[in-house]
Length: 451
Image (cartoon, rainbow, N blue to C red):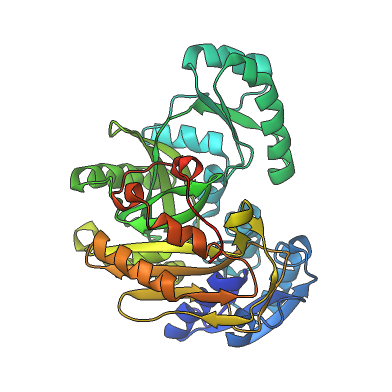
């Protein structure tokens, strides 16, 4: 087992990794920008190193400074969290070259799954259903027009290096194609430094279902059920739950079998997630693979009883899983609400400031993952995630009731948050009935006035 792990991320996920390391008896090193000096992950780590000024490019994305911090503190491994370096194949490769263990999957898997067009081809070769679309990059508008005739509308243009909905455009008619092409290219170039696009048919009224996989370096792989991630705004997830109200035992097995085939196809180990679009007729299609721990991993931990972060660390240290698919036992239901520093009453505009009052609820079935404390000044430079609040129950009805209680008691003052949105969402009959898709938030008239 490792003696010392450096965490190359910030906020709640850095704190989550520190807690896992502490349970494993591993020393930790926190890295931080000069505005994060008083963040909890810095205060709770055994050691800390300042790696640059506020801007991520100069600190949390500064590969040279992070590697230097690991060497300076004699860290023998780096956990990248789920931040900017978690799916950076060049960073993982550099760790290997510096004899520092990268706590994550093999470099080849990161690289192949990071190119979305290549990922489609790889999954198709492994027998995983993929959405009909281009075989590779679509390099010209004329090429896109020719493919559109074959595929039919609606279509989606997607950035090959994309994620989070950036570089994506839905096209419903041929007249829209040229403008959508230019906008998608521009957004992709700004977000990912490449304007490569591919195209696929748009699956309407789909649900976003993802399968958590876990594998070791000895070829053993299991899946830990599914997560429902359809409650999202502009392709950004707001709420996740496990299991999905739309997935039964037979469909879960088909999804899991496909995910394991895809993971084997890329020689995968560590924690990873294969994301699918589930059509209304029960068909499902590969969307992408995230080669890292996910923000929403706690709901899987709650229903499976598996500590995914500790498993990541054990696997990176060369240990075998020690269990098979037959040993995986999923029980109960878990829901996670992402609490962001955004104002839902003002079109989710970001909010920065100082936390003037804070109360995190407790009680049965409640878990809070957060780096907040009263008096903490939220810097305006990073992701707006403040906390993940998780409710667990014997079934969906009990987990919903506990989440309502949790949100009613939750107090975060000093900045606007998405708490009012979640309170309103949990009162919607369609949501309570499990009748929703990825467009639900865009179409629903939720009352989100600040409470």
